[in-house]
Length: 93
Image (tube, rainbow, N blue to C red; front, side, top):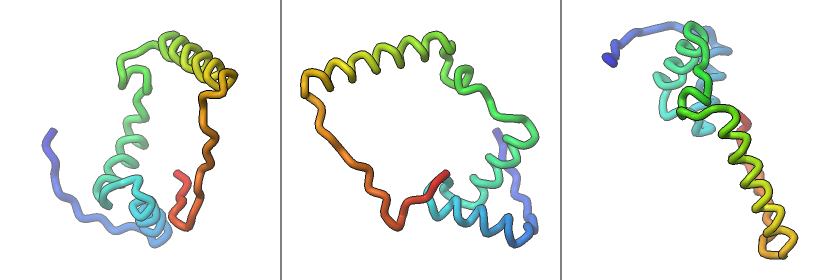
């Protein structure tokens, strides 16, 4: 896919929101953030099932299998407890 350069002017709140998303690490740069926003707005988001070439049933079966294995390991005492660290760099997406 060819890319073209465009220069746009954004309202300050929109610009600040995009800069926040870049600072969080969700996007590499301003262009990537605008590209995704425009794509999702005009074309809509692709189904994650289509994107990865799976069916909802396959995903559900894999989830059930993984959940059962986790439960089995938990009952056997083979899982370590862990905590999520939410420091100043935490940024919800």
